[in-house]
Image (cartoon, rainbow, N blue to C red; front, side):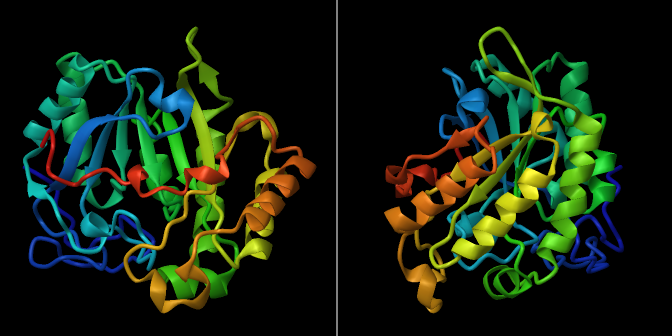
Length: 298
């Protein structure tokens, strides 16, 4: 029997939805929804490697980012209903295809379904590291709950500003939530561990996608990263912002980030010593980074 939440507090929205009867604020109801499961080559090199990350995109999301590149699944709920047993099979199929890891994208709203699937898959021979690919909008309680399941945390740090996070993601408390979640992940995961081929086996990657017109907030995010023990995480700066979904409703989000703006972000990261990680080239702002959500592999 699945333990479907009847007063859901899996995410920081704490909406207390009885998901046996109705969907939560995130849009997730009582049937596990998955939009894509395939080898993905567009993560950081230590995740994608040469063969790709075994990436499973889950439907719905607790954040409401107006510029979400995955809006068809996060906002519109595109996906196919599957059982935990089928999800366990998907994990094993990705391993058989040569995936370097199992990459769970926006998974929190479905943890009561995912954890039994992971347990079953491990009992049937799954040995790959588990990557938790998240917006960073997580409770410390959820992070602690995943201590025995997640090997690699791939966490966004989107904002420090309450104004921007409220305006763009309907979450003015974003940083108040993200900061302790990041600190908890660092505490329980430890320093990054790589295999002989340079693939990450255990550790935390902290991502920040620079937004147009938000230079000061990007600097505040980098200040936060610089306050953390530098040998405990891998920073990853991204320039790939592209106007998607309802971005045009906001003046600054109608355009891609300028070369000057992104250069300022990169220069500031270097000034703070955040150099042992990844910095996307400015040319990375391409729509090809968004995979087709055609239910492949589901």
